[in-house]
Image (cartoon, rainbow, N blue to C red; front, top):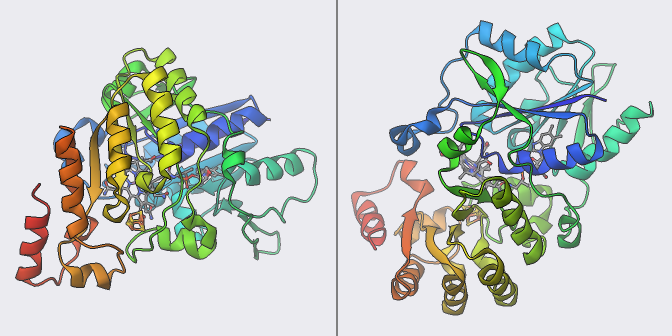
Length: 389
Ligand code: B12
Ligand code: SF4
């Protein structure tokens, strides 16, 4: 069976898509990957100012070219965040016209957070949860001509015009995550260029998107429940999402080593986990020891939640090579933190600064709330002063 999987996003990082795609390729070798990006990641200025879905406009001709390139597959899988959902919708519609026999599925963050919206697109199904095992079950049933419309984590459009909304399957356990293939990286993949259509992804694309770094996710989950975050939906779908899950440290390290074999220029690793510091000290120590012995590269941790900062965790990670963290303080105002049900207090952030400064590492503070209006000047002042290390 021929499967075409396409990711719509500003760049080629696509951490979840790459995990899913590696699994799809394992169960069906005739699987091809496509990236459709805006290429604004090439601009430093845009990387500071962009919002979600700041895409350059794709005209109807380009949408047609995209659909024509994806046509002919037995199954076409789309993956996108909400900012790219409109483009996904347009391509799905055109695909239905030019390739009516392709079974189309929309997965990724948008169908998880807004399934009722995604299912209205011209697709046969959506995947509103973890994709690997759901797709495997669907694929086996589809391939052997059995009824597949009961597959959990997926919704299906019925011939009657109704939608079958199946329930969720249990989240994958850490032991199951350990059995998954490493994320798809630098293999046979294509990227859309407005002037040339789909062409092979080159080392230059990786350099433009990632610099000299490898972008990774080790753990999934976050114990908190800030009201502005997609986590609220993941937890509503399954409260077990609060518990951190991850494959073993050696699995993670082997994924990095495999990427480095393909791209020897890789000289640092960026971890995008939502809540890296909530991993237990014993697991972080195991990770740090193996990292220092086998990887010997600096790494950066993007998901640091102030209330999970502990001196011993920072010490062991900086010893292993962590030289940069990004911590979401969100606001210096206790009132706003309470309003958004953000656990922890702004004073937690100063503890991190002390730990990192003592290790001569860099820390960057971030806030998703800066976009929110309605704060008094006084609260803004507190936010600013709290975010100056
Ligand atoms: C890592 C990450 C990033 C990284 C990498 C982005 C990327 N595309 O990979 C970086 C730092 C670059 C990033 C940037 C942004 N991000 Co971000 N990011 C995340 C984060 C923390 C983890 C994503 C992840 O890998 N999860 C783990 C994987 C395993 O899960 P998954 O992605 O859902 O994939 C599974 C399923 O969806 C499914 N699946 C996926 N694709 C497909 C396809 C098919 C066909 C099927 C069947 C199944 C399937 O299977 C996968 C494996 O189980 C999430 C939060 C979260 N917890 O998910 C936010 C999140 C996705 N990001 C978000 C946002 C808003 C952004 C930005 C727009 C922020 C900004 N203003 O700059 C940018 C967009 C940048 C871009 N590239 O376009 C929002 C999206 C909200 C929404 N409604 O779409 C989230 C949910 C955070 C939030 N605020 O709640 N992000
Ligand atoms: S701590 Fe971060 S990832 Fe966790 S719920 Fe809050 S904003 Fe979302």
